Amino acid sequence: MGTCSILSNEQNITSSSENWYAVRTMSRHERVVTSQLAQRGIKTFFPTFREVHRWSDRKKTIELPLFPGYLFTYAAMSPAVQRFVLFARGVAGLVTMAGEPVPIPASEIETVQRLLDSHAPCMAHPFLKIGQRVRIRGGSLDGVEGVLSANNGQKGLVISIEGIQRSLAISIEGYDIEAL
Image (cartoon, rainbow, N blue to C red; front, side, top):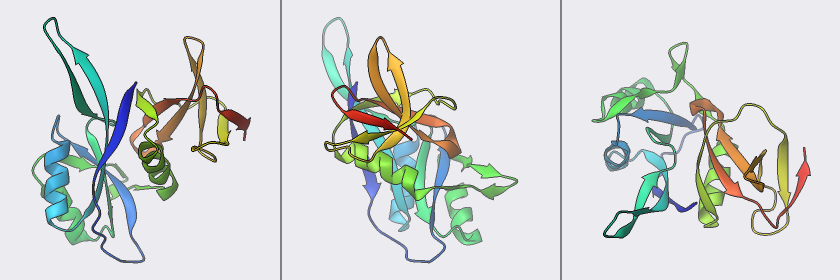
């Protein structure tokens, strides 16, 4: 597993109708889109993780997108903001339903941010729709909820972003968990 981090723009446009939205990007354009939106004052969240790649002659730690092809914006999605986001270089579109941008629950984004802030080892994980939901009890991740998974006998917790059908997994060995 790699170490996760956040590339974000902390500027905030205040409005009562602000929500998180998922932005689909062209392949490997997440950083370019994040930079463009940040320059226009739109708050962005681009979660990444670090992974060691080994070649025959060297090894190098590289930073990869946690959700390749996606980043998140926090804004009041007015027609003007939507138009700017859609016309930013490298944007493939917004995650929509019936033509309207789908808000991502703030609790899902906050959970991912909290995990990344804790520097818990994590990696991208296939999206899971089924499985038992659990909550971690105690430690730095107390209260974090997700889906219990097992991989090679190790317990893990999968945190999902429903709107983009992507997930991340963390090892929870040594943590107490409870069913929801």
